[in-house]
Image (cartoon, rainbow, N blue to C red; front, side):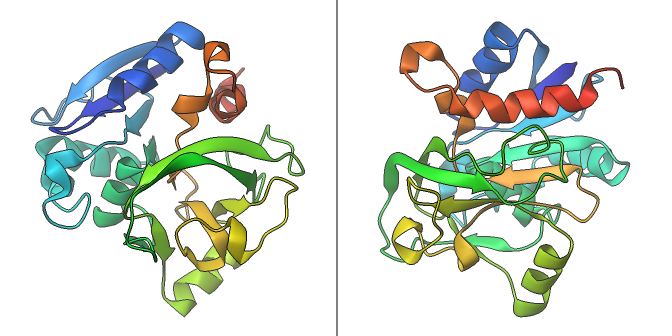
Length: 231
């Protein structure tokens, strides 16, 4: 399977993703420069974390207009796969590829720590191989991670199983104390109606190497790969 990882000015998790996808999981991975429109025949586009264009406007608001995003939008509208992590999630929301938006954390502070989440559905390639009852420990690092959507959109997300992850405590309970940023309904990740575009604020690529003492994030990437075995 061939992955493409976009590199924007200010991306800082691009090589983390490249390392995990290529060195740990053995996939073909190419860099996609933000000024180029050629997606190089990739099957799956990854939009990494970081501070694209310095987050000088809303996070992701400038990156959304990069030339490469024109091709990403076309790719996704034709059923191609894409996933945004942290700043990448923000960019995909700004591009209209994912519902809702990411607002400033309720405490207006940058959060960088390990926390816990559980899959909210198994109806997507990102979560289909995950144990619905298993709590995953995945780090976050963001200042604008509070997921928000209007009531009608939130209702659609729940009815269509478009919420893919929710923040929980270490025992798997959903409550306000386990919610690090004030996201509605503890939402940590969502997918679009077609379930081919995904976004999440936690960083699975930072929890995918045994040398780091945590491989919970690798389970998420393996779920994606398992969905394409024999396809």
